[in-house]
Image (cartoon, rainbow, N blue to C red):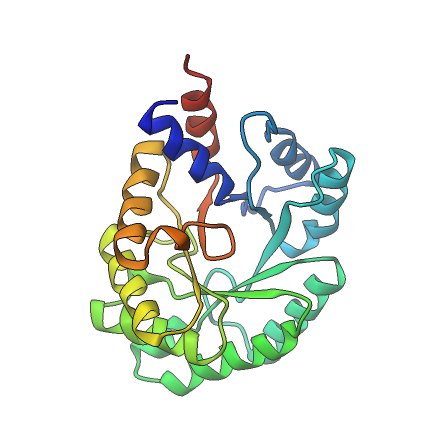
Length: 247
């Protein structure tokens, strides 16, 4: 196996295979699950809108891929929904079988100086998840200054996040290595066991390898496992499988 194939094999095992488009249908979800080739590698999760969580569960079960988690999003993508609505969404998603909730913080409020609101959303969402679902917190790093990326990461951790995630994939700038560096160093400084997810814009094995190398340099090799590191990706799987298919 070449170095690039090793990175590809690692990347697929850490992937949240994602479709979050307004045009999504049950067929879209079935096709997403059908794109998984178990012989080449199985992703950690699929990430879909809440109304498709049960479809994803069913499609995975039909292919005997129940080990693949189902993630969904809340307060997505604007981060501007009332907290009550966000918590209702969270509870509905868990009822449908969601294993992971990816919450967008009210990042515009944070830009306006309201750290308390961010903490409130994270804490309340964590409480709603209870022991039934993991909470992954999206800070929308591409919209934040470096200082606010560090602040948002710290607030997410303080609020009880299991993971801190870069982006929704719905703004101009999504995952970057610079933001990843700040976020991972903030996680390390907290001393807590918190995961990291790079989402949006990681489309090739070459790009994924850069994130893996950075994470390993900051957090150590043991950090590169699905419980602690994820890629949120829709296009990456194709390149991963093409790389693994190379003889």
